[in-house]
Length: 177
Image (cartoon, rainbow, N blue to C red; front, side, top):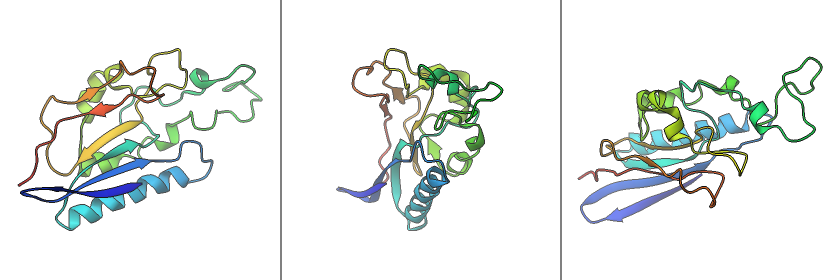
């Protein structure tokens, strides 16, 4: 995680925070990263600061229709979800145990893609795929603020298919005075 303060004339205490949470840890590392991210946002907020924060949280938004991507992420020769498979799930592909990890962020701060917007058109906000030849199949990337986004300005740049396995997300922000 990286935190920086932006100096803009007439705007006080504006911060940006960027995170790349662990994707494949087999312990509680990813959850600790998300908690540390929340703690940093809470620290800025409690100190009277404003923030634009986000990045790759490597977990799904609340209300996702699908939470298990083991089959989609399976490589040749792998088998998951069948009797005798060990492991039963592909590491980093089953988000089911994490379904509530972002609830606090969504309830306390404004996500650029709020849950109601996401639930109505999940495909439109997918930002990641593990298969370079396939279209985006899940959302792992986020932007949050404790101030105000310009309504209906969020864009998930799903046309950026060659640059990364993540699609950029942008949104317009109202500068606090």
